[in-house]
Amino acid sequence: MIKIAMMTKWFEKEIACCCPVKDQCLKNHDCEEIEFYYDPYGCIQECMGHDSYKRDKHGIKQVRHG
Image (cartoon, rainbow, N blue to C red; front, top):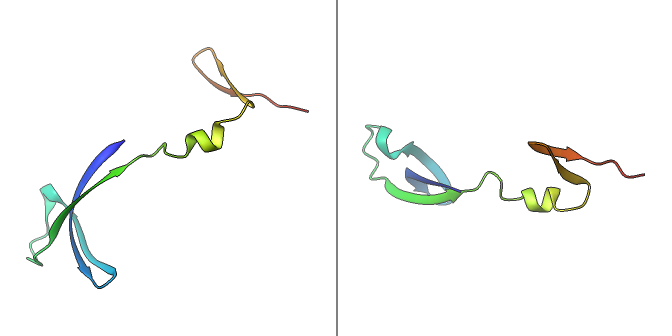
């Protein structure tokens, strides 16, 4: 899981500006800092959580049934 901090400016429900904290734009939009967590492997258990995959040496191998 990765923690990400961004400077954002919202116009109603649409995002108007989004910059990394360390590389903020110089437009002075009165942006607010938001933090969120990104999990690039969040749905891997749903995708691979069945018996058609097994560990093979140093990796994962798909086992074909049928």
